[in-house]
Length: 251
Ligand code: NDP
Ligand code: 8X3
Image 1 (cartoon, rainbow, N blue to C red):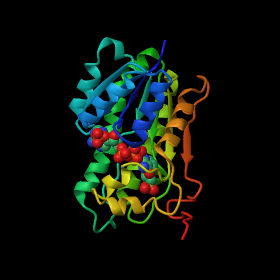
Image 2 (cartoon, protein in one colour):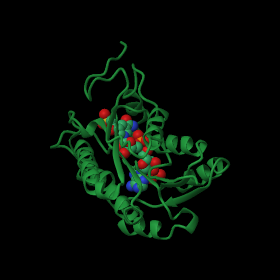
Image 3 (cartoon, rainbow, N blue to C red):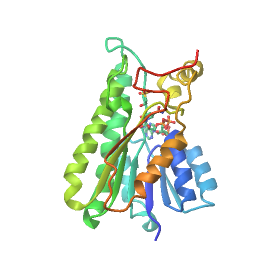
Image 4 (tube, protein in one colour):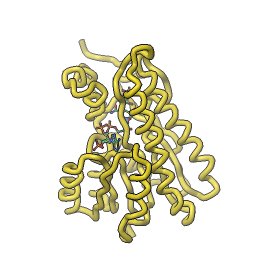
């Protein structure tokens, strides 16, 4: 029987690449995001390879999260793998100049959204004493960089929640682990810089960043390990990157 994976943030970047790979590998998929037209397109294209169900909601909306999971049709109601990927940075400002709306967006989406999703899916995993949660953290959850303040705080929170999940879910045999990427070229910087395409593309100039498919490959590796193997915490950077602030660029 093929496993069912739920991917948040499947409409773009890492989540989308993971959906594409998982569809090819025959997983049943529940794909989530806010952009309906992208979900419709994914259902159409990936639906040729596997069974797809789409859910449109904002992870910040607690009621919408719980209702979406409660109302899943029978054939998608068993979730074997939860990939908590939805998230973004909003702004890159020193702490004294930061916009509180940006802070709230990052904490609400990256931290509280991840918690709501997990809380909605966990009861069935606990009951079955099986399941696998992959939390997409970041190198920003391992170190703090200039002007990264609240985004880094949100990803440090993901790191802590991932550790907490591993401890608290150990008794049920549920696997929990984090994948923490460095610089991946996605829509991440477009969102961070609020549509300033030039500023966004400059982030990835002069070196080879990771591709979303690189992270999808790793997530696929993580979920296909035998049951006794839990990849607890994995950090991956482009070869050109040594830390959040040290990136070897061609001149
Ligand atoms: P993208 O901007 O390309 O994708 C973000 C995804 O999250 C989209 O599918 C978006 O869907 C979804 N999303 C954002 N806000 C919400 C919301 N409020 N409710 C529901 N879904 C939401 O970025 P990435 O693929 O790069 O980011 C994926 C994850 O990887 C994030 O958690 C990010 O922090 C993390 N990450 C990214 C790195 C990078 O360098 N790119 C490095 C390290 C970690 P929609 O807009 O349709 O709702
Ligand atoms: C995304 C990577 O370095 O832009 O989490 O924060 S970084």
